[in-house]
Image 1 (spheres, rainbow, N blue to C red):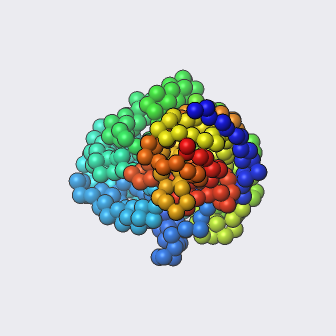
Image 2 (image 1 turned 30 degrees about the horizontal axis):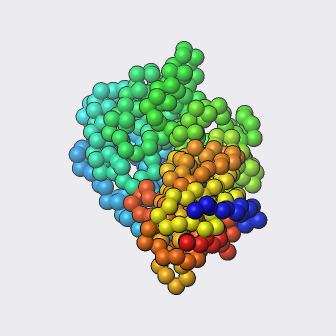
Image 3 (image 1 turned 45 degrees about the vertical axis):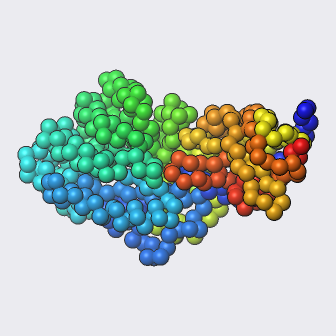
Length: 459
């Protein structure tokens, strides 16, 4: 039988105002922030930020000393209790474990027992008094103990479906890849590679991330900047910027405050970029917040998928609800279905083409493959879901329209009659099926999370 079709223009159903809360993109908040008392402790015990638009994951950033207070004795419960609390509510998690902090209360971010085992290092004064210990980042004893820790850490957490990424945070102040608050030293390239190699050796299934300061902060112009940059790229690691709206950067660089926006260009098409605002209260004090304009510019310029900030999340959300919604959508992928070409009549058991025109208005592609689902439902009966063959949504680049012909097969067992047809994308990457929210009016969204397009007849 010949198949007649009609074209449905879906642009009138576009909804730019609703927040599309989708996996693998959007906001994150610092729960442990270079210590145990920022910023998660500012939340009420029953506050899980369910109203935070597009909140994707919780970031745990803390020093090595908390997790291995004695050699070989690990205090995993410190982070496990937070993992349980937040993942039970559908959030992802991410980690950074640092070896050097800048407050006297964390003098030994690298556990003291590492120094007592013979690892070399230097004490440096803190701005607020007291001192902190910076390890010799290339010391063989230090590296041996560090590797043993990450072996154990990775055995426990690598590849967990809720783990968004692991920061390479073992080098530099706060794990940021620079020594601006300690030795002011550019450590040799072989030392930097040793830290990268430890992480690559044990984190085989989870995305690794490193601060762009690992290159951007280097003062020596001996070619090692370029070599380190290429090494990071070759290992499949992605980049983050930890300094958006930091006054030092805001005083010296452009609107986005990014020192090296060009760094992100080789990464963003295949790996998620992470943008992080300075401590919110500092941006207010230093007049670098500017209603979030620099942060927005940084997300756009870097093609960021994740965006976060240091600060009390409840306070930040209360003061910036509009920006929270805007960047929840714009960061990462943001899908609009603009047009659909539908068959009016089909035959059971036949292969059918469904023409779809997609537009990604986000700053980046998706790094997950989503299934395209066609759903058929006859009034009063159970719906039938069919997975369609289509192009790879990971190729849908920012601000580009993509037309595809999705092929699906009408189930043999379907009785003749009129069926409602709906389509949508589904993510199965975390062990459960989750529909992807499209920027379409909820008036055409079905109870199963797909989008109603019209009726077809099975003849």
